[in-house]
Image (cartoon, rainbow, N blue to C red; front, side):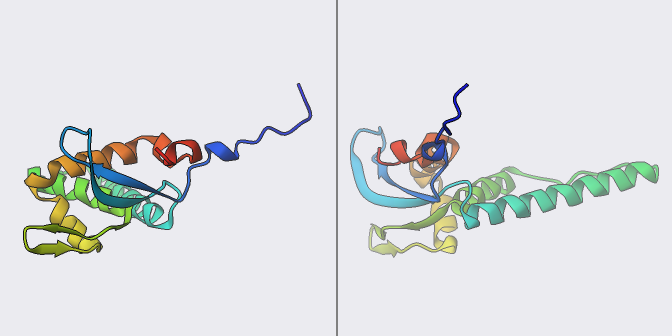
Length: 147
């Protein structure tokens, strides 16, 4: 074993990366640039912490019900709830984008605009690209961020 330190700095995720949304089919770019927050970005950490707090509260309610001999009734969730949660997660990792137009309407970035736009079934192709990038740790490493 050598005494020389191994540099792992190149493997540490960057706070942000910029990706171009591709046209459906994935061959040609749209020009729409999205800035994504890495896993250690404050915006991403805020979402993770809030989700963890919510899950801990739910677990505490389940445990309290069990200790008191009551049945725990889980929350009723529907497809729209799951979609909102998924879009919320994606938006928690977006820090900006180049303004876009759909018809006569312009969409500058804000969390509210991103939630509204990415919730549209017609924008599923863009939403899926964002989710793929967020889920791929290579999206935020120095060597891969350029790709």
